Image (cartoon, rainbow, N blue to C red; front, side):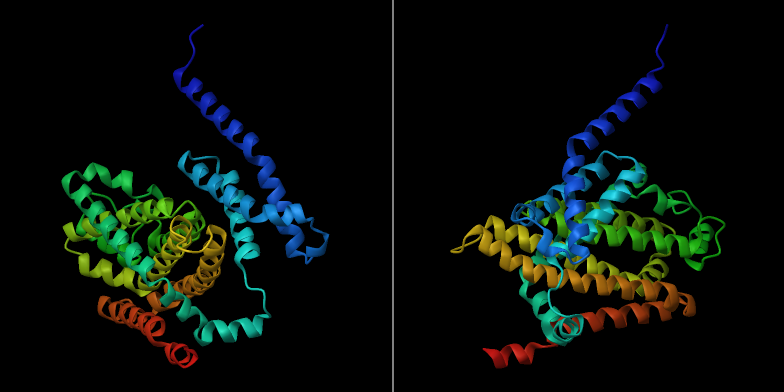
Length: 343
């Protein structure tokens, strides 16, 4: 009796997925148990062994999530791992002071000082993101067949090579018959939030996976910029994207730089020990990541309200430009006088 090749391939994929889960699930469950007890304020009930294992388990599960995304593991497992990594991040890197005190220190200059402290990593991450966007543009310009390889299917929809100017314009106006502007923007926000968290979480591997993730993410942006440029809509698309994109992309940049900062401190600790260097970098990077979450929330508000209230390209570009100027001014100048006084 002949065996259906497609059926055999599905069985192999299922077997591979089950083996992946069975080999790693004990670490997932152990991390989940530790995180759950910490979230309930049961720190004293944890053993020294569990406390020492917490950061190792966090990095292990973050690595599992990265692999699971690459091999397209089932959606339920991916959702479980993404939620677990986010919860563990707050436990491992979250603030230890009271909320009010932490907010005052954080918004009063702590966040901006931490961002300035990773300036070299931001420059590297920015160069990599620009290179990724250029690579994405050049790849699809040379062969449009690359478009669907670079741009995720849920983000493409009607926005694909061969689409007319009218169809592409409709996606920017929210009048298309497909998923529409709101769904597309929501997908962009969800994708960028996941990328931000993963870019930071993968920094422990000396920053290499973080840089690769930044290249992959911005290559899709470059491909879409090429698509709208071919239709003569580059300005309109850039204006639409800028409303929330200047904040979201800035957040991704900072998340990638934070991950790279941790990885670089481990690879080049200098005169300090690796653990000491990684600990110091981790505290600074954690503060940056807390701010990234704030930026992603601001981006969601801009996407949900400002974009709806200001439909014209000029108005959208003004909003996007204002937000970019605001973030630059805050990070470059705010709290700098306090730093100088403390020297």
